[in-house]
Image 1 (cartoon, rainbow, N blue to C red):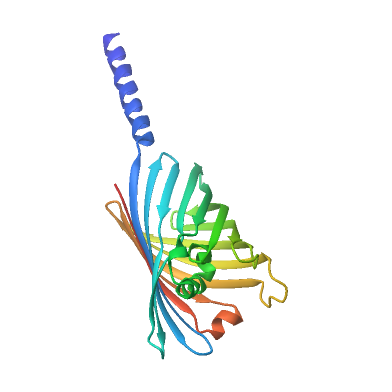
Image 2 (image 1 turned 180 degrees about the vertical axis):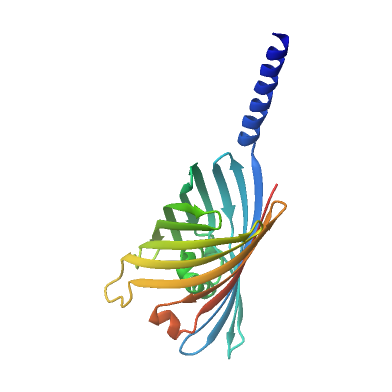
Amino acid sequence: MRTSMLLLLCALVVSGRAAASELSPRGLLGLDSQATRYGTSYETVYLLSLEPRAALQLGSLELSALLPLSTSATYPTFCCRLALGNATVSALLREHAGSVRHWYEVGVSLPSSYWSDPHASSLAATAALLHDAGRYLPETTTLRAGLGAELEVSPWLALGVEGAAHYWLRADDALDPLLVPLRATATFQWAPDWSAQARYLGLTRVLAAPGTEERFLSELSVAVAHTWSGSRLEASLSVPLDDSLRELGMFSVGTRYARSF
């Protein structure tokens, strides 16, 4: 009897510690960088965007904040510009049911780029057009809501889909205020710490200004990631598929690093 009571108490202690560890907060620091090259009718733009991020994880809920920065140079003028992006906060809720993982996210970007050169902010927003231009657009507040899901087809393959709505509140006018990005992914896990991912991204301008020629933009990207000791490093290459951005000769190379503690 005493032995069974002792085993029961031990089981309760272990389960209590496990539940407490699940609810205990965890921190995450990350840095996303993206180098983009594209051309216009009179210059070629080389741009580097940096997005430092801090997050707090409370079980399945993640609260994060980031402040984007960008620096650009143009040829043949060799003019260099620095730009502060729009401060962004978001909340992400993750859930898991069997082989399916799904998540919901809401966020907002506030127009902190007001203190930057508007032209430098516009260059950065053009480079991030298919990723999230609202983080750089001058004098623009962006409201976001999105959801996604990923299905683990096998131990080495997972398929995912994600959709969102980005609503721009601009101080000057209402050009292209609502955008809907859709993303499809295929993740290949060929080793415990290594994975590769192919991504297709489509961006639809639901409410576009009169005369807008292209209401749909798309991009294809590939990425390789390595995970170790609470850290994750990813390198990616992105190429647009639509005619307007291909005529600009646009392509991007990015890295993403995150460390949890």
